[in-house]
Length: 393
Image (tube, rainbow, N blue to C red; front, side):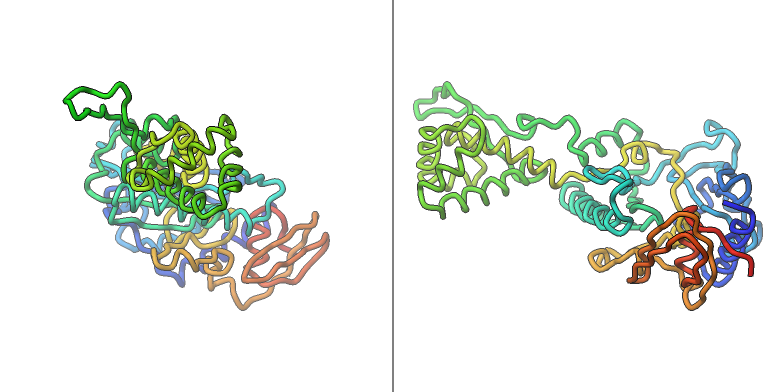
């Protein structure tokens, strides 16, 4: 990025902050603050500051308007002395639980071949899965949802019960959400069946209980059985045979067992036939693949993590780090809703050396090599990503 482009962006970021009220997070005075400047190629991090170090007797918005940083962060951790230079001297009090979803790290997404809009759509689908898991399996009441301004989303949980969790406990939560090292036998409940004469059955009964990954698998199995029993026998047998290890004879027997033990299946019993157990195991694998949340585990486990400030601008895109109400998640479109008003309504000239595509504001702009006059938010995005340079006025 050349000097003219850098100074233009720094100046316009300052204009944005001077007209935008940016509020600190809860317990802002107990957090460490950091920011990246536009100097030194835009990689110089200034950190180990308290909020009072930054703003003095002023406001956060005033500081941002004067400093005009490229990126702004605050810590997940809360400290006795957040401005201390060494982590060990800060006096850790606790940390928010933070989940990070980055489109670059999603399974099946190749940043080299996947368009920006498509990547963000995949990431929002992953966000929906994450929120579902946090609701149903953890019951967190307080969730702050944030578009990162770049390639993903952050979810902050600030409930009192999570503040003291150490790295190990946070890693367990992350592994659960990721479905890491989770086997089918881990979610199946096994109990010894006692016969009518008071003697134990030689076989244990295996059941998928309600809730968690077991409950999701149980629901998927029940739906599968419902569909199976609606098919003609020949098609139902063929459907069962599509699973490895289930031949025609076993499939026919399993179909009869499903009809005769429909109530037991609804209760999660996977021992009505060996083929049903086989299918349940495969469905468990499908559930993990389709419903796990591909979070960035190191972000969740790091109690001292710095995370982007909602309301700030992302220096790699010029988009706003935008807080999202839970009810608005389905309709949220980062390519429209995260475009700062500061950059709307103006047109600027930029120079492009290599062809690039910008998807913003509900439009697609294909910029071939040369000079282009474009909406300012398009130019800012292209310049921030290193795909364009500011031309002289």
